[in-house]
Length: 115
Image (cartoon, rainbow, N blue to C red; front, side):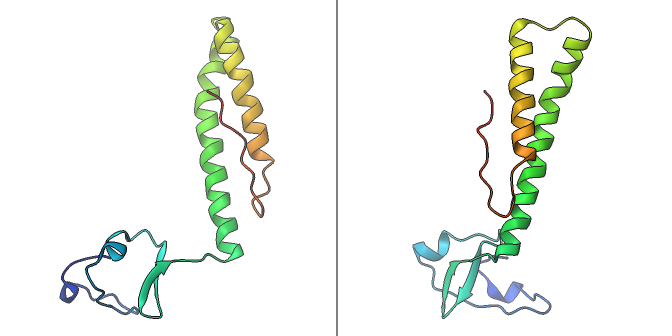
């Protein structure tokens, strides 16, 4: 947590540090992407396992997004109501979904999202 009044913090099992109110420290947030090291607030360096877990989460989110676009387009095709543009979009999103599914989360290279 970040606050201007350190006396309001009492995290169980953690420490509280007071840092100067300077621009560099004000750029931080409580996202977990920062750490206190050697008397300064610095960007956190994630382990390979943590990076892979983050990539797995991103992969799941991208696949979920793709499915939410694909489903109504598939329905339009199945009901013979799809326009040519919808058929083209469906194919692009299905290809994207396949490519995202193939991403190696140990070394992710994300495909470009269809427009």
